[in-house]
Length: 252
Image (cartoon, rainbow, N blue to C red; front, side):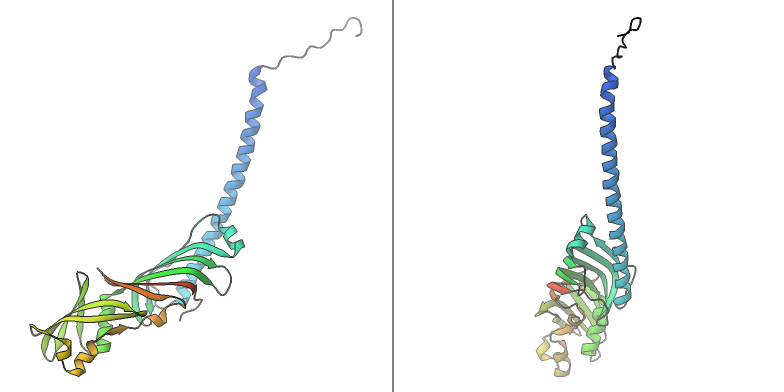
């Protein structure tokens, strides 16, 4: 060392300064990762939301008598990986009303799983439920029997009232599903206040009151079959279920 010069002595770094850079760097890394993950989440949800909107528009355009704005929800995250594998895990939808084979229906819901993302669109499983209002039942009974009746809900049955042969008619209507068809049994018939058996009525009337069919099965997507019918406050709640269900891209 040259004479007259002193060796430089390194200044001890305070403990707080030595330790502060590690957490700062870690914080930056965590922040970047969070930003990337958050960005991916946002992008995924934006694409999913766009698809949901387009699906709702397709319902609006391709189904008959749509009432209100359809809603579609594609569940589960991430959405983009589902698209890449070719199927959507869960899809649900709701529309206030549609027309099925000329019959108005309300509160229509859809739940489907394993929906393919390319044509032909097929759902691994699907369930559709809808309510046939009492006004729709009135029209069907009138068309089938030529009787002018008004239907109301009476517990777990429907009550039909009207006129026949100039006398007051009252009858209980019990919906049921048989072999994928929606039928209505006419029970507890009262005419002019007197209980009457269907078999005792003139054939021109009695035959029309036997197994009244509500023809909606032809309006269901291929693969769906009626499975249940229950009386609810607004009318008759029907349910159709199926596997490998074809998702229609146009009105039936």
